[in-house]
Length: 194
Image (cartoon, rainbow, N blue to C red; front, side, top):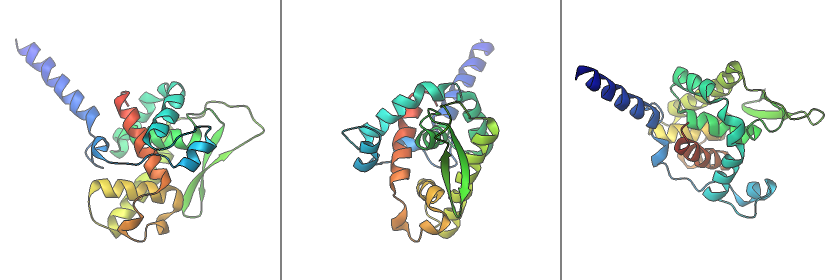
């Protein structure tokens, strides 16, 4: 009987760990408008919003599935929901469907694509850690400047991730296209087990 209770306890612990990572709020409760119509059109979609973000995530899902163990390891290391990390990777590299590399540019981060090379896989634990480390720094910078809630730190960190620390000048700057798309994709990835 005690073995049954032990297994039940582990099941509860595992399911609660995967549903909310605690340090940056619960992404399942965050409202987001999703990707803008301009970004949606550039990605070949005739629609925008959460539905478009979810479609982009769905397209990238097969490429990202193989990185789930790496993403979970890095998520635990930085106390950041793996679904958010997956959303950032999807937004930046289309799930590794294009050759990409993370490069620091001024205060922000960008993906450098090499058009002369064929698409290939590139995510290593070190690269996922680098992306997550930069995001974590941006989240902490937002937290120091605008001590509000973990959800707002996450939003600010995502906006500052590509725009640089100076992008967030007030609490009104906690919504940007990158953030809105990443959060909508992250909610999709969370439902898919990330």
